[in-house]
Image (cartoon, rainbow over all chains, first blue to last red; front, side):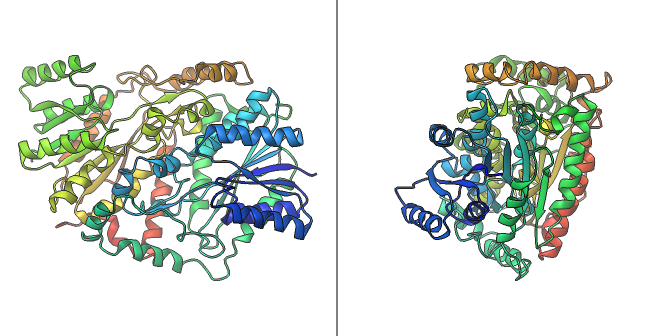
Length: 296
Length: 296
């Protein structure tokens, strides 16, 4: 069944790959990003070219996940054009790389963005639902990266703290919104893994760290973590997995899917974490939250 | 051995209990909090009275964990007075309670504070170390709460996303700083568990949620989670455990300690998470980060 889908952070990486794959699978896809008339104007042109070349319904859309107003406008536009919105894929993220202490002092945009778990974006789906008083988005797809690098805080992903998506799922199920969480491993090819990461604003402090017992640490980490990614790792496999999930029937989609060529152990840890959380919900009488309500 | 200790968020709850217990154990303890001359003036007087009554070295100290300047001034004051700082206990936190979407829109102080993992505070120890060019704090004690409520995002703790403390430990070990993470369960007596929690600033939106399929959910959660705390649960047991850890020899302290009368499963999940992270460090050649360097 053809679905209306919005993806955040779709200017590059997994977001872009998934937007293309879902459009090719026959869905109406809004590839959202910020600065569509600014530095992403060339990306917008490229998105439009892809749509023409492949005769698919793929559209670039302005959406800055740091701005609730921007998110509200974007969602309203989709609903106005399509009458509904079926799938929200939370994908936008920004990696920062450097000593935790130095980043911790950058209390500006980057850290808020990173740690606030996309304040605007995360509420797109549920906000649309609450405002309209009816179920609009029937599926939320979460792209959760960062738990691998959680071994080392130098690489802080936007989604590092994204316990949030597992929790939020429980606040969406009674609205009739299903959640699938995608956990990709590191794909250093096909995405802009380290290349687009932010660096500490406080260079003087960063330099102090580089002169200490962790001298050269940043480069060592990048090399070490790139080295464990097998050469056959294909970032497109993440997009393919999401296409399959979107095409599954409501209520039968997996809660969490790992696509990780490095086998970093996240699937072991998350199996336990998810289970422990579920058991707590059973224990305190909230078992119903574990499945989306059919007529929410 | 007598240690010089600073505790953040020591105006109430675990912070205050631990400050008292450590002072009684013979240490010099700075019970830090914000607004020492404002709304916490009475707490400061009470801290001073406790010190006099028990003839212990307990001092109130101004430290707002949301302000790097405030943290810098506080740490400098301790070092000026004592010549060194041995233990930093990151304890400050603030719980917010309400629909995730509503809180997500509150991009002001509360959310930043919550999600940024105490930008200023978390760097107290390492900042002091880096600036002085020598090891000052030899132990960081982390109080990590919130993973229980991670089952439900309505109760978002400041420390919900605190993967951070496990990660940061790896950035401190070469500086010769040991980390012990304390994971208390919910203690609804003896702390200000739900009582001091923040409520959504956007009351109109919160009301919309209360009118939806989650009507009454907030109260149900509070009741359900309070009901599983056994009556014998004693918040003082957390303070006692921290006193024991502080008194242990350097390099032999436990990485993580759970004190949880509700047996919520966190100790099962964290055992796996910590192990998976450690194995990744071994795999990529960073095994040395798992133990604090003796002469860091």
